[in-house]
Length: 376
Image 1 (cartoon, helix red, strand yellow):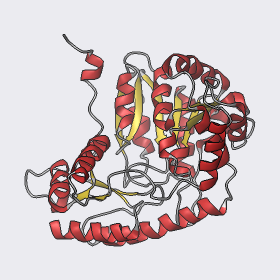
Image 2 (image 1 turned 120 degrees about the horizontal axis):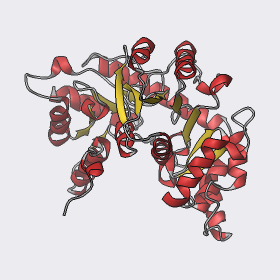
Image 3 (image 1 turned 180 degrees about the horizontal axis):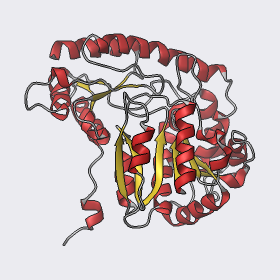
Image 4 (image 1 turned 180 degrees about the vertical axis):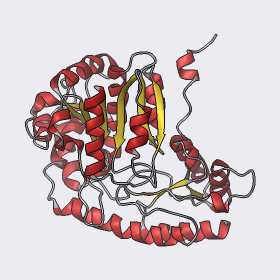
């Protein structure tokens, strides 16, 4: 019996595949330095754990409203001037947020423009919604707004903007975002803004959001996550901020997709929003120092653009690849022979590169780069 064409056209997530390989090797007792996983090494704050435990003890184990608990939505809405709880929906992580967004936007053959390199799931989620991903190359990891404009056609439905960016760590300036806002208005397009890493911006920069352009708020869909910002990856709490008609459509879908989100986990998320601001600032400083260390080591081995946000390097390794060797083969050999896990650039639509997460302990950071140098 045959499975659907839809699922047969979807490729496996390379980040998930490499995580499985790491777990397999670790299970054999091998010591693996994991530069592949996009997860901060910080512990979940005790305040969040305590609030989650109290919610469990108080019996918050039943279904919650489809769009999320009211106190959490109301508090999140304060980040967005003019929004209230009806402009927010809570999701099972930002990944489900984005999956749902493409489901409500795309009709068959609708096109979604995605700057490349891009997060592994963007193109596949568009295809799962029946749409067609249109990958547009960036220039030194920054948006090429002219190329994006030239890629807009009669079937274009939306533009995806991910800043700070996964996998490159690029942070897009206000001027570039303003051009995207103008294109959205001119061509009547939606803009999907993945801002999962908005807390992690370095060098004194601030994370610019497309929300600042009031004229596109009727067509702007912002996704954010508690996973990266508050070290809550296992809680699976994300959210979407958008116009009420969009949230209403997402709620109709979510009612059939997941129903509600883990109720007690939402109370943990509510506690996260009450953390002392000095704690996230401390995490950011820690990651910035690791960014500097990782960048120095990487530039001694590869061509690499300095990231200004997130917690990834995306070096170009093409000069180090022997004839016929792909970055996928390089990453596989590096894992098997040197015990260092990275993600090949093919996963992000750009061969000849690898993604390195520097959100690990400093000892592993130094040791991992030493092993990479030895492997080369």
